[in-house]
Length: 91
Image 1 (cartoon, rainbow, N blue to C red):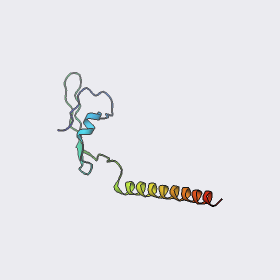
Image 2 (image 1 turned 120 degrees about the vertical axis):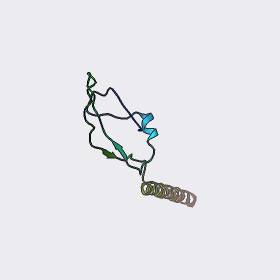
Image 3 (image 1 turned 90 degrees about the vertical axis):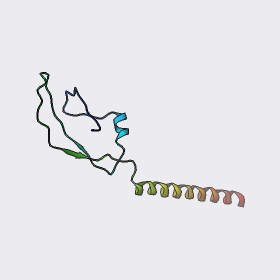
Image 4 (image 1 turned 30 degrees about the vertical axis):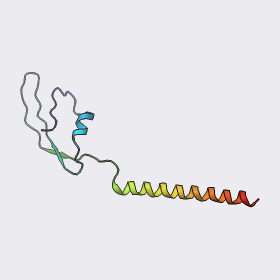
């Protein structure tokens, strides 16, 4: 069991930052289920098992696109600076 939580009184739950750091595998599926217990300690039935995946950071292709756009920007900036320098030297 990775996370066990007691005392939840709402219909949704968000895991803490610490719990999030412990769930590190982004490709592996995680499974969840819930069993409710009331104030008199009567336990309900377990729900069916649900499945979810942890979203990773940038996908590899997005990182390459950002790098390529940054390189194009720097190339364009260098080109503009060199053109300005050449035109200043000709006067």
